[in-house]
Structure formats: structure tokens, C-alpha cells
Length: 181
Image 1 (tube, rainbow, N blue to C red):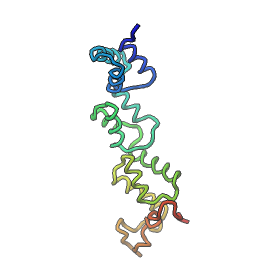
Image 2: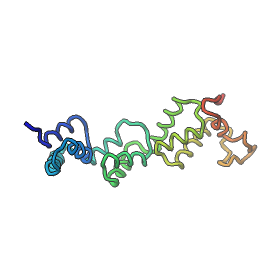
Image 3: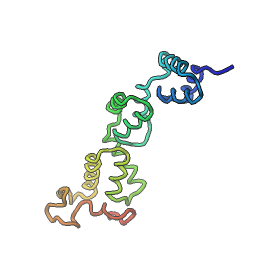
Image 4: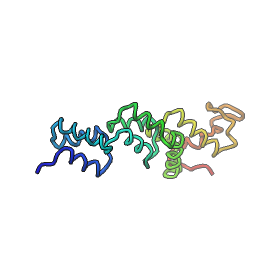
């Protein structure tokens, strides 16, 4: 006896949570006609087995690597969630972008303690964090690591300014170079 699209959909949803778009694509790949797929998805939505908003909420709140808001929205859109729903789920996430960048930076510095300032910034940027937040967090960590140099502004100007006086001079070293003593 041939498996119906509804039964196939329920089996897929029992195995893992899927978005409407993902489920449609999987059923379509198995050769089910569009009318049967539409009916299966409508039934799964009606019965509460298929809920894109819940998927987005769980995806954002779930245990995953720390990434920026833009990356989370893009990941959800790629999985078939409407952009507005994805943005709302990210806005309502229990961990804000600041908490996620701190977690990402902490993991990064534990994995690569001698990582340069520039390399850390590039990694955080690839994770989808905005540049302004990246540099704010990196400046705060540099100021905490070198409290005597906190009075120097972003251009390296201030009392006793100079290339060697920059709070980021130590971070400008090549990856794996000697770190602060």
C-alpha cells in the first residue's frame, strides 16, 4: 500500500521539527502531487504539528552557537520562515545579541588565546554581529585587560599617545604571538 503524503509528513515531523517550506520540499522530492502535499500540510498545521512561528522561536532560543541577529534571521529565512516572523522571533529571543557576542568572544578566546584583535573582529563579523558592537566589545575587553590605558581614545590619542601606547598594540600581534604578561 502506498504511503499517503499526510502519513509521510507526520513521520517526518515525528523525527524532527520542520518548517512548512522544508516539509513541502521533502514531500515534493518523494513525488507526492502538490494537491496531496497541500492537504497534508494543512492537516498538520490544523492539528498543531506544523508551526513556523514556534519553529522560529525554538530555533532562536535553542542551544546553538552564538551568532548575531542578522545571521539568525538569515538562517531562519533560509529554512523557509517569513522574514517578518524571523525578525520577531529574534527580537523576542531570551538571549540578546550582546549576550551572544560575549559568549562567542569567550569561546573564541578560550580556543585561541593569542588571537589578534583583527582576527577576532573578522571571526565575530562572520558570525553575523554588527561592526559597531564587535568593536565596542573588543574595546571593552582590551580596556579590562589593560586598565592603565583606558584613557586612550580610538585613534590612539591621549596622554602618552603613540603606537606603542595603544591598548590594542598587544592584540595587533600575529596570531599565536606572545600575549600580555
